[in-house]
Length: 405
Image (cartoon, rainbow, N blue to C red):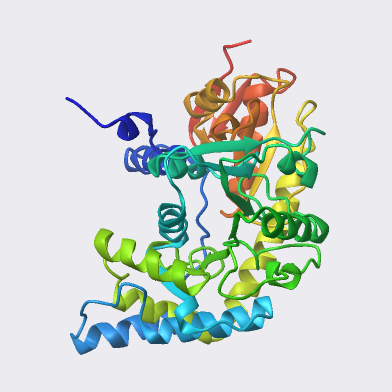
């Protein structure tokens, strides 16, 4: 079979593959604990469910405009003013089939072959392949000081004549760290000075802890005219626990939004009208579900940090937000894929290898599940890795004996 060069360069999504593996193991009746997922357990807001149900009952579910229905655009305009302090017009907004599609279409609209896109490491697993799908070159940048917090110097020194865009994801998947206001300001100014695009992936921006507040990139922009190269991405998947609804959006200058809508129109047409109406209801409805989820996640994070601190050799940066922590397990095995596979095989705990996020020796662990799963999952991991643990472990009625060194 003859595949294109781009098709041969793309790898499967490791996080989606893990979700599939977890589903298969559960179907078999195995007591698997999934600490690799990025899907909150809470229900979608009732406002969203009622709106979807009412729309479905009309029987009138038709095509949507390629850039989204007017009601969703108005909801995003209101959202942008409330949470970003910036007023935008309907021509500056495009709805997509999730934040992932919004990023993908933005990259397709701005990238030429061999142009480069910079993003801090660790990074979301899809960024490199999304850039490759556009014929571009991904340029991950690891902080020189070995932390998860990039400095503007780290970004600046990788910019060259081929650089077309920078992607910033804060709070960050997979590390959970939130970049400082000073760093966001510096990146905004850098992109304006160098005349390059800045893609702000803000999908977790309201799921932050310890009294921190969302940071608006618009606050630091000198140019908010139609010449602005600022692209803000968001959606309902994470903050409203609406992952399966697949509704995200982009806010950018009018010409770019027109180009993105043209591309999307040929790819998928507009997102489902039914699901857009649910998203409108979530954005405009009672917001208590977001705060409830945020508080639950903060408590879950605290529990996971306590349990991880009981390991002798694990190093962690307590997350400032999101669903994740990226813990350094290199004390036990520097090969994160081998370590992750061992934990699945020996104690049926699913984790995501850090190498998929650009950082070997680490594992991404999710705390968006139940407290029970967090506690039991970490306890199983400790039993598998810590040779000072008892030699036997019971998982339900099954007795496991550690027969490895």
